[in-house]
Length: 174
Image 1 (cartoon, helix red, strand yellow):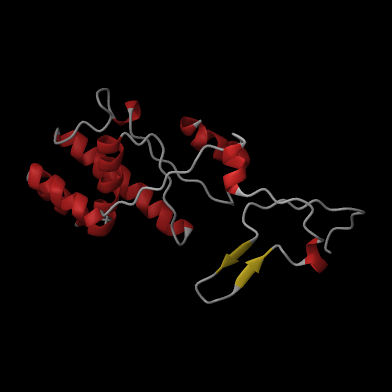
Image 2 (cartoon, rainbow, N blue to C red):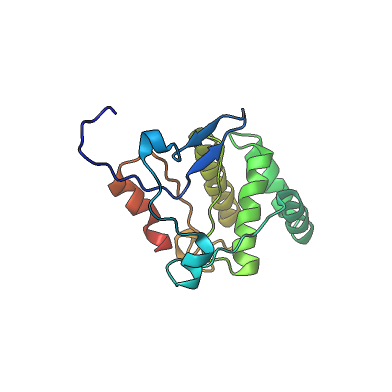
């Protein structure tokens, strides 16, 4: 409506999103977007080899924290010291749990989703801070030798980020 055009092509991987307040953001309004001319379900895309099968992994941050600090009590001291600054204990546990999933299960790529860009940024900063402190103390070898850059890498993308920067951040995941 806002940009004059003879025709429009709208593509969406998420035609409907339900918000916490019950409001629906939808691209299936035929009057606004036109009729759906083709729909490819994820299962069919996997069968055709167009996308990699999705594997979900659920991490219990508190459980991972308890197990890791039981194995090495120095971790609790380091985490407590980290969480007394700008990093909350919850953020420290979450970052450590994601790293432990990477280390224990051979996860090569993981994405976490947050309710806001600010929360995602705090999570990234907390994860980097906690792992740097743990590696600096010698409690863990985050990267499997050679520092964190040799293994576990964090990054954050958001819609306001320029495409070139987004590509740069996502480059390590292929």
